[in-house]
Image (cartoon, helix red, strand yellow):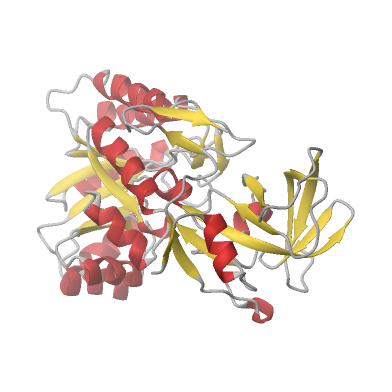
Length: 392
């Protein structure tokens, strides 16, 4: 992967026609180190967030060797880099073929489920294996999350109690898990999730070997400024301690966005300006999906290349290059008023899901990926990596 000192250097040297995706390895090292220093449990990187080979390798090199996966290709991506890395199949709905391949071909022993039918599939597909570590996923409120995951996954508390008892009969080790939703904006969500877990433990009298609090840890965007991550860890630690169990379960988490979001940015080019509408060469069918569907506002900056920039700032919305009207990002994206055709814009916080969601719709696709060494536009981690903080 070709490396540049900064995004500005990249633009000055390449003058790209197509969208360019930038990777910052140091950003991943900082966020990864922060989690390892502050979270008192096992960290599973959520591969879906960014499965790029160089990103996965950097995550591994930073000290994280456990991975939350949802498919066989994700397992292969991880194992191709480090055959000894441990994969956890946390997708609660899997085909029998995938379960079989994961267990027998890749040595995956850990599976998640939220129904009796899924439990039966796992047992049958592994030939009644006796070394399974099984997690029952419980449905919890996603009220503080920007992206709600509660409608698709998780057993209701009333159902989870019986399922947990049944699963315990077939598991070498058993766990309970939940997920507060993506980009969770308040630590109290984790307290509510742990409360649901507590209720199940009290009803069944079965102390889990593991508790998986899932992902949801936020990053920072211009219109979404979360509390420091320390507050999240403190809330989790306090509520786990309040369970007052004879033997404390091992704690898991599944960060994705919080690990890699700051590491990536996309450089787009202005193709046309219509008043406060900018038509750019990437969009919701490319790396900017989150800017359209959940309407996440990316931090943005105009790459000046030395020209005089207006001090007046204007709110713009973006249209992508395809012929689909859904290729639209409302923003607002705050940029200098004199922005024009052929200008370049850097959009930040795209390390999470930017590469994952790309398609080749209408023939628009770019695989130009480069490493840069400058700082991200926004960050939650300080230079010493001892405390998370917020900088716009």
